[in-house]
Image (cartoon, rainbow, N blue to C red):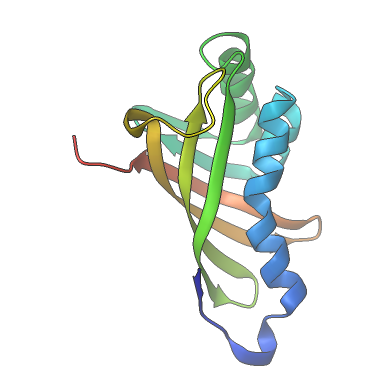
Length: 140
């Protein structure tokens, strides 16, 4: 994984907290917990998926609750960081690769593999997503 450093402005704890956010998403997804999933975003956070844009925790929560009850039911999600860049002491860009695992899968199928950009900000509640966007990993 590549990283950059702003020197003493960015602590090892901050780097670890930013890198750990995908695992928190994985856990919320595994629990089908739309509230926890949405709580990883700032109150005005944005989530962009192919064909979908959701703004704010309530909108993200509603979308994920519908997904967990429907097309995402029984699925898991994975995402591994491959780049972390701190744009300032309180702003980080995290890039991941992963996707949705269908029931019984151990690897993401090529047609569901994604790369994602996560823009995180430091808040009084810790590091949170202010913007998330993903797109297919492979050209179609």
